[in-house]
Amino acid sequence: MLDPRPKPPARAGFGTRDLYSFYDLCGRIYPGMGALYDQTVGGLIIWIPTAMMSVLALVLVLNALRRSEERTVNDEFNDKNTAQASVQARQPTG
Image (tube, rainbow, N blue to C red; front, side):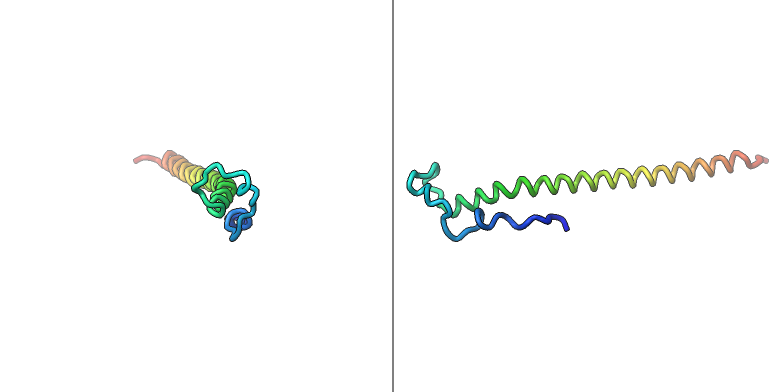
């Protein structure tokens, strides 16, 4: 389960009607942008950064697991080489 949060805020992001009709009375900052499109963009702006934080946390955890596994493999390899070297050192040369 990667992202337990609900989908983008449907009420603010993907509505079928203008939720804030007040802006029709006082005017919009960008008159060329429709009310529904403005709500969709606003909903995505609210949703995407929080989703990015979850992805960032996942990447950090996976990287930590990768580094831990590499250290374990390297330690096992070094232990094996050390054991072989000590066995070879004990054998008489002849």
